Structures are given as C-alpha cells and as structure tokens.
Length: 347
Ligand SMILES: Cc1ncc(COP(=O)(O)O)c(C=O)c1O
Image (cartoon, rainbow, N blue to C red; front, side, top):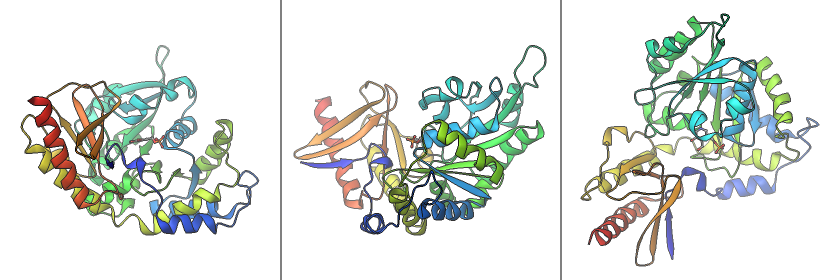
C-alpha cells in the first residue's frame, strides 16, 4: 500500500542530516542549564526572528500558552481572531490555565480590521476586564494558510499598541508566510512583542517549537514552562534537529507552496469540488467536497493500492497540506486518486 499523507505538515520525518545531528548531539541537562544545543538553537532562533531571546518548547500549543501567561494577569482579556488556532484548537488553555477572557474578532482572511479590534478593547473599569493582549496568526491556518503581509501585521499590532496592549504572533508557519511573500521573516515579526514558530511542521523536525521575545519575557516564560511540565532534560537530542531545520529547511518551503498550488488546480478541475484558489498561498489546500464528513477526522481516498490521506476540518471542508515528504509526482498521483475516488462514490 502506498500512502500519500497530506493530513498535515506535522507528519514529516527527520532528514538524514537531522538523524546524524541527533546521533552526534553533545548532551547535558537543559533544566540545569548545561545542555549546549537548546541554547544554540535559542540563540539562532532569536537572531533569525530579530528578537532578544528565545525558549525551546515542546509544542506550539505550549509556546502560545506561555506567551499568554507572560503577557497577561489572570482576569485580563485577550483579543483573538475567531478562527485562530489558539481560540479553536488549544483546548481553551488561555481561559482554563491562564485565566484570560478571550474576546474574538471575526477577521477577513485572518486579518482583523483596526475598528473590529478596537470594538473589543476594554480598559478595566468597574465592570470590565482589562484587555492586555492581541494574538495574531500567520500563516492563518483555518483561513487557508493565508500569508498576512508585513503591512497587515503592522496595522493590527499598532492598533493594539495604541491601546497599551502587548502583541503575540502565533507564527507556527511564519517561515511559510515569509517565503510566500518573498520577505525577510523579520518584516513579519518586527511589529510584534513575541512570536512562536514551530519546528515540527514544514521545517521537518520531529518535535518542538520556539518562543521568541524580549529577554525579561523569555526569563519569565522559562519559569512558566517548568510550571507546565515543559522543562526537558537532554533536550539537545531534538534541539539538534531544530538547528539543522533553521539552517537548511526554510529556503525549500517554496516547493511545498508550488505543490499545494498544483494540487489545488488539479482538485478544482474535479466535478463537485470547490476551492477558492486565491486562498492557496502557502502549503495548504482547503476544499469543499460533495459529501459531508465527521469534523476533525481523517479522510481517505483510495484507488488501487494508493491511499491519499487528508483531514476533515469541518463537516464540509477538507484540508490537504503539502510538505517536504511529498513530491510533485505524489501531488499528481493524489489528484488522480481523489478524482477517481469521488467519481466512484458519485456513481
Ligand atoms: C497555527 C497553529 N498554531 C499552533 C499550533 C499548535 O502546534 P502544536 O501542534 O505543536 O501544539 C498549530 C498546529 O497545527 C497551528 O496550526
């Protein structure tokens, strides 16, 4: 059976260079502060994203939660886009663990208009919370993998700053955004106070994300990471992959974007499949298919001994994600398999 796994870019396996780096990693104990590679990774990440300091964390979810914990006080409010990952898919940690009230703004393709942000700002008078944080997502996953431009990020961030709020960027795929827009990633991170990006997605690492921001904020986040159980010991085994990823895996992301576009074009030619091609800007393809699905479940399409895997995000929307372990030939084959399998189910 040949499986073309397009469920997510999280399914990627380490590269040969990553396996080599893991094997040769000099190790210490990162909680004691003497594991060299997490520190090297943190320096490299902070430098690449133009921030003072960084913290290696086990997951993007933990990185976002740490940011909320460190930018707010329990009982504050935070503004998030209504379909943002932090609001929709992070088990409500912002409310449950950070004790922060989410205020949601319905964005347009991930962009929250200044007036919509301002409508949600509360200044902590007798009856209200103090809204102390704005969270932005780039690329915006549920909007289709949309890459928000530096101008859009700056517009949202300056609105928040004007009201004394901090700004956190969920940049799980911020390098995809930078590559798609042809800009230095710093153009997307400069307007925000903190940014989390994932190593474990398009960059191909097995585990890990990095939270970047001012030194004082990162010192605080290190302590909160321990509180959440995220202090890792021989973290260098996985940080080794992160270093390889930052040095070698960013520039190739455009291949994933080309593959996503090709897949979208192929799928859009199938009768009954609806895709807004203008949303296919990075490595994701969201489409509507003729049948309904159980949300949040795997969807498979089969033809002969080839299986294509995707994910139903909602009952109507299926998502395909390209990544480093998917070739052009896989994409072409996937298009044929989906077409044949929908044709069969329509017969
Ligand atoms: C936009 C976005 N933010 C955060 C996360 C969370 O990352 P993790 O799965 O590492 O917790 C994801 C995961 O898919 C994501 O797509």
